[in-house]
Image 1 (spheres, one colour):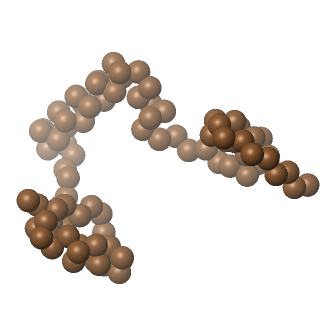
Image 2 (spheres, rainbow, N blue to C red):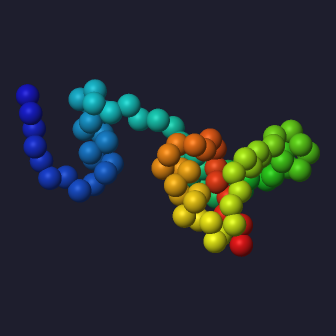
Length: 88
């Protein structure tokens, strides 16, 4: 069965696709931080863990802003892993 409809509401589209078994919803950060207080608590815990060294941020790729085109070429060629930081 093929159904074609023009539905603009993404929540309705997701519900229909989930019901049809064509969509596997994944939990993302916004599912856990719908309330401002929860978001604030999570942010405070995360930054405390960063300060304590419990978690680390590894910056492997840094480019000066003037080399943004080079950084983009590296991304396109898939020669990078993780984030790229452009420095002023």
